[in-house]
Image 1 (tube, rainbow, N blue to C red):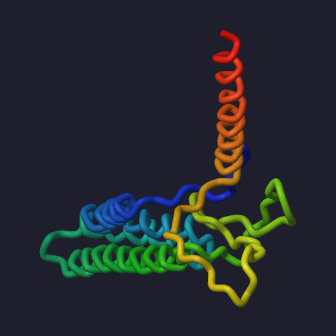
Image 2: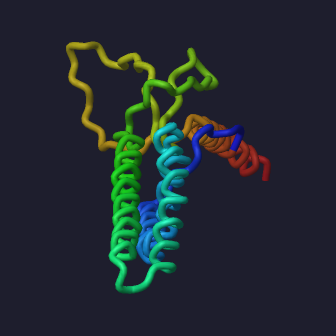
Length: 197
């Protein structure tokens, strides 16, 4: 609401699975012609030189293999070898893509409630800066709260309640004060009004 969050929203599990199926299907259903598509996806996600090299090399290999299949006679064994190369390239690129994508999503997932070590800090209205919450709706580490009771007396058991933002608590307190004020002054006015009749 007040600034850039810094992290793009996470994709849902359904979206991730759909993308995996589409990239795998592109390579397999084209008989290896589009085997470079999942490899380019890995190269874009990871950005390593090996991934870019594999993606660019797979493109002429798949096109060349399918050109051989289309130009040699059906009885020639070179056509069989070329088709096998194209299909192995397609299966290999899909397997490499799925392994890389699954590993990338497992590395990016962190347990809820713990801030990653590289997060920045947020400045609240009171107190020193504290680490920013890692996910929307999850509170980061909270500063210690002074105890209202001496250490020898046990704390009363209260049911756990959901954490609310400080602004809502402030408005709630102000409304309680206003309600008390109106009760006190409303009683006096009614008493004065009745006595004045």
